[in-house]
Length: 153
Image (cartoon, rainbow, N blue to C red):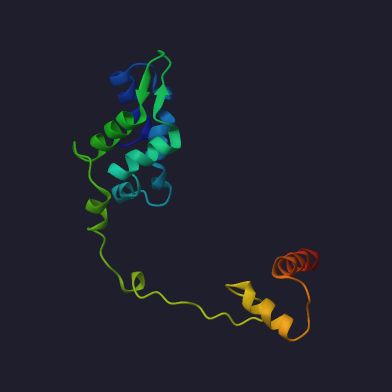
């Protein structure tokens, strides 16, 4: 299948109704083409986990124009099977085939260099209390800092 419209037409033939009843589901499965117009875009949603994600996005069923409730998972399974030679791969099937690159591993934590609080604000607040720069409680101090930040922006 080359286009979500063709999947929608296939759904209408299979489940009844008209292609527009199914278009949004098929558009969602192929949305990753916006980023990479190669078949490898399918790694994003063309797998078993993608079917369950489609249910979370569209609901468990879709009522077509013929008044029939169609499980969204059936629509997704049809889409994935049409694109993946009749099978529904797992996400692991796709991820196992990613060619590892050095930048994918060994992340690092950036060091915070500005004087603004980073991470747990209690450290900066305790420092200001100890230095006598505030008598506010932590929640009031955070609110005051937020107010200062919005006023200076």
